[in-house]
Image (cartoon, rainbow over all chains, first blue to last red; front, side):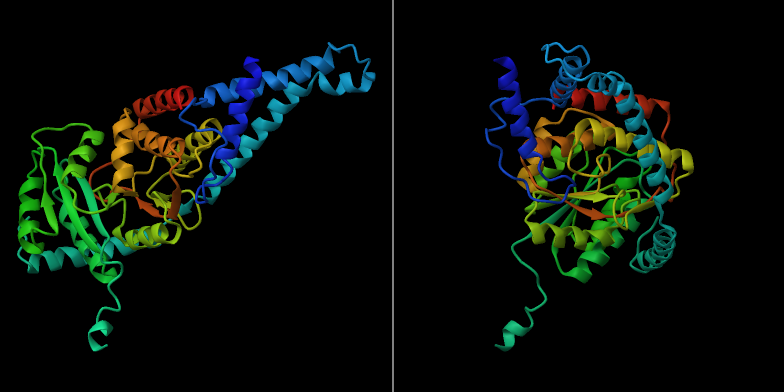
Length: 129
Length: 250
């Protein structure tokens, strides 16, 4: 019951967040967000527990579905595998972004020239520093 | 007919932009930032005012501001000093109270934020009717000047962690060069309690939470020409604390 309730809010938030990268429009949520705001912490806990349940079901065959052994072999190291993949992705992304971080040499030069111009102009206008 | 021709270049006369400049010991930078603001607002023709909120700087920033007011006029330079150094959030509240524009621009007075981007902010806002437009160092032509590898790494790393944990829908959370609709800023400032870097982050996270739309404009961030900027262990610890607080509460 509680889980269903949480799921509704989760979906609610998913739609609310449909714009991935900033500058886009904001679609209206299914339910008013003021009614109950699901924090990011709760979203994470919910997401992690869903994955954990799915993992447990397959690895330990909790439902007694008699799944082929291959499923189990693939499933049990999956959490570690996912962590490693995520770690690599993080390192690669941050590394790439650091390397691609623009150095605004031109902007600094422009600013220095404008500072000079401003100082002269302000002195002419009677500013005493 | 003839009289209308001269009106051609005045864009949306009803809109007025109030620039809030909180200052503390910025006597070197204040005249320069004001000069640049006057230059770019003059060129683009938007209606504006500059509100200087000086927190009792001992270096005489206020006296410089008074001289600037004489040069540029009382309608353009508005002085709203406070007796002593108080928080950034309260500086905004104080500034908003005296602002006559329907849009508010907040920026640092230390020249790291260049006024040349303000016309782009305004165009972006008009283009999408956004509730707030945020400058971003992390997208498009945006970038920084004067940062070493360590600083870049910390900045990018912190930004990545924040994106993963909060998914805020904006690429630059700790930047403080933004344009807000006045009533939006009023509502946000009311709700935000953090200090320092985290304050800016909380503003944009809460904006998303309240369903406001956010537009972004790439900016170049030229780190302090005068005076030094700091990023020590203390800043990092308080950033992480703030991040976790937002993670648990928004």
